[in-house]
Amino acid sequence: MPKTLMCETSLLEKDLSGRAYIVTGANSGAGLATAEQLARQGAHVVGACRRVDAGEAAFAEFGEVAGSTEVMKLDLGSLASVRSFAEAFAVKFDRLDGLVNNAGIMGPPQGKTEDGFETQFGVNHLGHFLLTELLLDILKASAPSRIVCVSSVMHVGNRRQVAEIRLDDLNWEKREYDRTMAYAESKLAIVLHASHLARLLEGTGVSVFSIHPGWVRSNLAASMMPGWLNSVWNAVLRPLAGPLGTLSPFEGAQTTLHCLLDDEAPKHSGEYYSQNSVLYPNRENRPGGWPMPSPNPNAHDAELAERLYHRSLELVGLKADT
Ligand SMILES: NC(=O)c1ccc[n+]([C@@H]2O[C@H](COP(=O)([O-])OP(=O)(O)OC[C@H]3O[C@@H](n4cnc5c(N)ncnc54)[C@H](OP(=O)(O)O)[C@@H]3O)[C@@H](O)[C@H]2O)c1
Image (cartoon, rainbow, N blue to C red; front, side, top):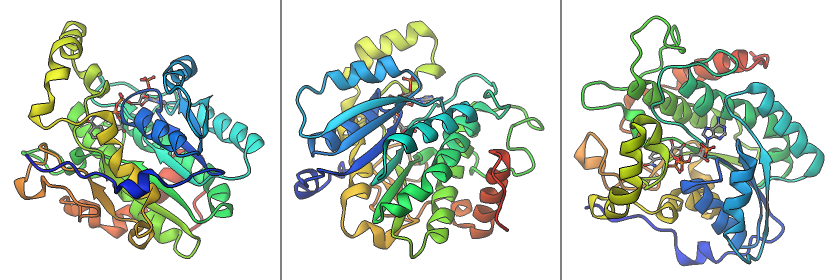
């Protein structure tokens, strides 16, 4: 079993007083563990959650922390909600040290977001894309600052197929729907977004990373299972899954925390950081790496990254600069 990559203790003891972070999807899993750790180190953490009550209930479990927390409403499946969140954030805050684009869905039945995008592409990529664009000014004004885009080992694809970006069919209207590959494509879009944005942000003091958090024991797979199987998974299998190579949410937060807190990380802006994963189709990549080259050749296509960036600007209703 590859060794779990863990942050140096000094990073997890760094004083983050006075710093502000946004973590999307902070009410469960790796996002919740990330939010808790940042708050324990003294930061103010805004949990951007689609269910505010669930976020508040989860944060209430932290007990006393050195920093502070609050939850604000964000539904990444609605561009209007993303805009409302960004406006509300700008009214309350004048600094943002780190944006963690963590929320995600995996493998729901075929569907569309409020704005008509394929659900996984819309929520995982486009919602975060718009959020990031709307927060860029405050991130630049707060530099040095960082953006962590949570992708997945699945951005590589599976044993049969390498994931690619079909610019001619981003919403899966011309192909038979494959929910696993739709997830893979949305996660490849995230890797490409991070690499292109890092190029655009060179010299601004804002660094961007894409990451794979590892195979984390979380709620993520719930939408891929019938309800009864999900209950069995939660009650019986999830606690036993550690020996299979799965990680606790705290372990799953390590790669994000490393990218947010490590002094050397900004030298690697735009790169891909991966926790170990037994799920890599190719065995030699299983130990992961902070950073490591993505094993998907399409993730290194700078022209594709630029084209996707401009298409994303159009889709979310922002005019492309060029
Ligand atoms: N678990 C793994 O093994 C694994 C592996 C690779 C990558 N990842 C990635 O890691 C990230 C965190 O996942 P996790 O494993 O911690 O799963 P999780 O516990 O299911 O967390 C996902 C979070 O995303 C939120 N979310 C879903 N749809 C949303 C929307 N439309 N708007 C706002 N928030 C939304 C969820 O909110 P609700 O509670 O309201 O649904 C939840 O807070 C995801 O991006 C996932 O793709 C996970």
